[in-house]
Length: 460
Image: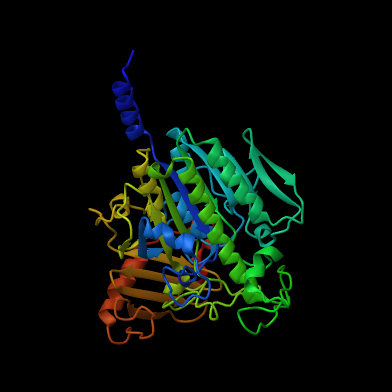
C-alpha cells in the first residue's frame, strides 16, 4: 500500500501526464476593434474576453482563413489555406472524406470532442457531417444560412453517433441553449481530456437579441443609450427589422463576452484552469448586414476594410489564449500566424498525430511567448465572390491582386509596419516588389478541386 506521500507523488505525476483540455471559441463576424483589448475606443467593453489576454497572451497579428465564414472555418479545421483548401467560398458543399480535421486527430488520441454553435462544413448524411469529422457531441446549426435565424423552430443534435433534427421553443434565443450545452459538456468531461469547439453565432446578423440583453443599452423610455438610431428595415434577405440596431449589436457583443466569462468561471470552479487552454478568435472581419454598423462601433479599429475585403480589417482578427501556469500572464505578441496553423499547433500541444501535406505550422512556442523555431516565409489568401482577390503577405509587405472577368489585373502594395491602415498604395513605387510577391502568389495555389471555386474564368 502506498503511503500518503507516495500517493501524492503518483497523483502529481499523473496530473503532469494528463493531456491538456482545449476550448476553442470562435466568434462570428466579430471585428478586430470589437474587442476592447484591441481598441480602447470601442463603445462596448469586453472585460471577460480581455481577461483571457491579461491572464495569458494576446496576439496582435493573427489572421483568419479568409474573409467569409465557410472557407475560413475550412482553413481552421483542415490546416490548409485558400490556395489548397477544398472549400474556398461561402457554400453548402460538405468537406470530403479525405479532408481530415483537427477534431478527428484529437478524437483518435483519446479526446472527448464536442462542438456547439455553427458548423457550416457539411449537412446531415454528407461526408462533412460533424459526426464523421471527429465530433462526439454537437448541438446547433449545420449551415450558415440557417444560422441567420436566432429563433428557429429546429436545430440539430448529435447523439449516439447520429445527427437528428430536433424541434425547439422559438421563444428561446438559440445562443442561450448553445451556451448551456457547452457548459454541460465541460461538466460531463471534467475527468477526461476534452476538445470543445465553440463556433458561436454572435454577433452575426440578424440583430435580434432578447429584450433582457438589450436593457443595459436602453433608457427607461426604451430609447438607445448609444444615441440616435436609424432603424434597419428589411429590403431583401431574411434578417428581420430592428428599430435599434446599435443597441442590438452592443447587446450581442456584451452577451458573447458574458458567455466567455461563464466558461472561464466554470473551468476554474472545476479545478481545470491549470490544464486547460482557452483560445478566442473570430472567423473574419466585422459585418455590415442587417443593421450592422462597423463605422459606428469602430469595429476594425486601426484597420481598413470589413468582411468580404482582403484588406486587414477583413482578415486580421483578435486572438487571445489563456493557459495559466503555461503562459506568463499579460504578454502581447506580434508574431504573425493564421487559421491554418491551428491544426498543427493543437496536435503538437496534445501530442496527437498530425497531417502531412498541409500549409500550417505548429506555433506552440508562440503560446509560451517565445519565437517559434520555424515560421512562415509568407502567407496567402484568396476570395472569389464576384471576381478574384488574392493576397500575399511577406513580413510587412502586403500585395493585393484584383481581377474581374474581362478586365486587366490590378495590384495594390502596402507596407504594414508604416501603414497599418493601408492608406498608401506603393505599387507604382516598388514594381520589383510587386513582381516578386506576384510570383509567390502564383506559386501559392493549386487548381480548385471543385468547379464552384475555379478562378480560371476570371483569368481570361
